Length: 184
Length: 184
Image 1 (tube, helix red, strand yellow):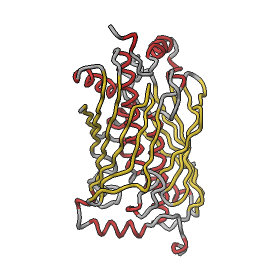
Image 2 (tube, rainbow over the protein chains, first blue to last red; image 1 turned 135 degrees about the vertical axis):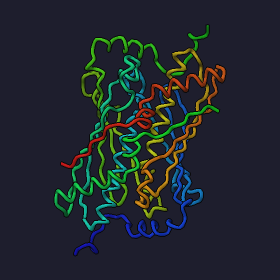
Image 3 (cartoon, rainbow over the protein chains, first blue to last red; image 1 turned 45 degrees about the horizontal axis):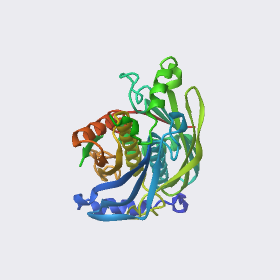
Image 4 (cartoon, chains in turn purple, brown; image 1 turned 60 degrees about the vertical axis):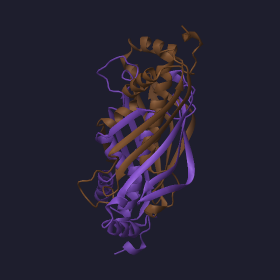
């Protein structure tokens, strides 16, 4: 066994301990993630994140972070940030990658590198209102991992499959989520 | 009519012209958005975006942009970026806000400010593997807009509803998307 020497930088023991501790405190597992957005001009906006709620109380990220979104020049906009739909790929990439590291750690497999390419296909006839049968968002997303690790191809595929199964962002994209939009 | 003086910074005429031009070129409306992710350590990753495909050829954002994702300290991680699931809120905020500006422009309504708050609720028993009946991602997302514009409450609500209807990210979150994950 080489498990003791495996270090992917994920504190799996702390997560397993948390799971035990949370068994007696169901309200502590209810999280609320938050963001605030301000329109700048045109299709350009800035979204800021800092606080969230979890473990029964208000929490904060170490720093406040802001993200810019815009449309590209080929949509007659000024490309002051990536498009909103590309942020979905950013979230999916980060979620699956964190999961790969955590699952590998839990299985005693040392990772050397984890890279992925994501491609999301969409037909813009939807958002342009050209054809009501065409959906607005992605038809299809493809994620391709290239992983260098102390494990067989089969074990690596099993790690990726487990990460996918436990991924919050993968779930949100592949299954419907209830979204309510209100105007104050 | 005051439509000529309305300027929300969205070139609606260019979009209407594009719609006409694209009617004869169905292959030009097929877009592929792309991202590349590199694992750093633990749950920390960096995702980079630059090129995409659309209007029948390779396109590029003006600049390459990278985004960091991590887990927060309360999950025994180092909080070197927002969590992947928060990027979903960033995308939704940017998409609905750009839509509000575009729809208002098209309807001749001057916007003065558009702000929104987003809240995504999830029960972390899912991702921690504590209860297989609990989903991994958001149960529910709430978006609240506060809009100052030269329009009635009813007209503002109609703008937001139309933005929601045409939003790529709203579609991806509220409806299932096919995602394929492969290992090279």
